[in-house]
Amino acid sequence: MNIKTDVLTADEADYGIQASRIFALVLLCINIVFISYFYYRDYHLIVLMDAIFMVIFIALYGLSYTVYALLIKESLMVLSLLQIMLLSVVFIGSDSGMHLYTIGMIPATYIFVSRRQIWPRIRMATLCTLGLVFAETQTIVEPVYIMSQHELMAIKVIVIASVCAIVFSFFLLFFNYIQANNIQLKKLSEIDELTKIANRRLFLQHLKTHTKESITHSVLLIDIDHFKHINDQYGHAGGDEVLKHVSGLMRSFCQQNDIVARLGGEEFAIFLFNTTLVQATVRAENLCKTIEGSPTDTILFSQPIPCTVSIGVNVLTEDIKTSLGNADKAMYSAKVNGRNQVVSIK
Image (cartoon, rainbow, N blue to C red):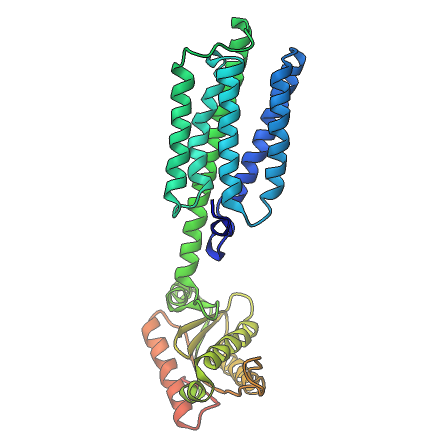
């Protein structure tokens, strides 16, 4: 196995790590229970084998905090399968039901291994299935220890109960992964990737939720002045730094229940909750001065990048399109009148 391929990439950094650690802890707990039982029954060879595997599982649990995740995940699965086969086939026989633990390992394989690593998934699922079938059907190997039917039945009950718990836990964890991925996808669809603020879609949804309220809200449309000139002079990297810096200032400007969004390019919008036109105009003027007095300081250039904004202000009505259209007209007037100023539409 190529160790270099085991190092986690940025987008796979946490895939299956939590599940691997849970699985390692579950294996430790199961081993402790069975070691105690087999020690009590004087099955010393099984105790020795389980003790060796438990030390290995503890070591792998510690290694799960390193970057070699794929190697650790596959090692956990292979060693667990080996331990199950030794117990079920060699030491106490398949009548104990120990081989049923392979059933719980199959869904675990699909949780531990990234969906892009198809062959490790297929390989582990195939090994688990073959091990289950072999332990269930083999008649060649006689077990080292002959147990009474009562004892075998007790072990089988414990195994079936713990397998059901493991399978349920892994499916629950799997659906939690799905839910977390859906939340992440929803977040990505609503957040601007560069500035980490809301995008146009989320902003319009936010406006729709507040248009029918009895209190007065206002909207600001904001455009960075001469942004093309900034890109021409400082490059797109410098332009991106300005966008991130300005959006950060707007985010700090927002109060509770306000929301700032990047509508596209260098154009932004802010929803001001429970704010009249006069109040919104005053706040917009303060924001305009703040941005003018806070040039973008970046390690890319020796001097800070200055910028100003033009802001259009309008109250929010149930006709969102008209409200934003009027704010846009006000912003255009601010640009025509010399930029770096605020214009409101009454």
